[in-house]
Amino acid sequence: MMRQILKYTTTVLLFFLCAITQVSLLPYVSIMGVAPNLLFVVFFATLFFQKKQDIVFSFFVVTLAGFLLDMITPLPFGVSIVMLLMMYGMYRWLTRFLREADANIMLWYYLATFLGLFFAYDILLYLASRLVGSPVSLGASTLIALAYSVVLAAAVFFVCQQLFGKAAENNQLKLL
Image 1 (spheres, rainbow, N blue to C red):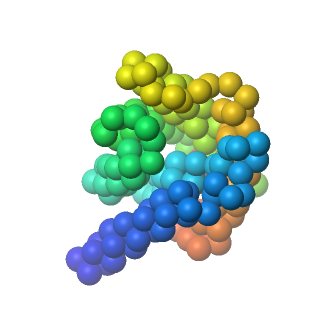
Image 2: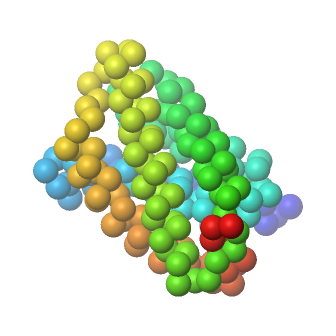
């Protein structure tokens, strides 16, 4: 029980720290006016490195990350939560076709899945912004954000792999 409380508390603190970094520090290290989406990177890493059976924690992470993204994006409240629920559904569907892999190719599965979900998230963000008339664009800035976020995602992958060590080896994926 105490371990669960610690897990949820640590997750909340991590996501709040990422949200603060997203709005305060990352705009100063932007490339061509585009900063990486740190919250999405940490959201994806959390999904990737957790046990698939822990669905309650997954929905907690989706809600927490969506709530914080809703505070940052110019869209109405709740849109990011719904989009991250869709991303989680896509992630679960994609990982149905994957099983354990060796550590040499785990990074490539991680990055390929991240790229697909990040691009889908940006498309959904653009479509939602068109519906409500908010200024979110899709174009060169999306590709720059994608490239910038992939570099950050790779760094987060290596940090998570070092932190979780043997636990991460049990969650490795490969194609059937």
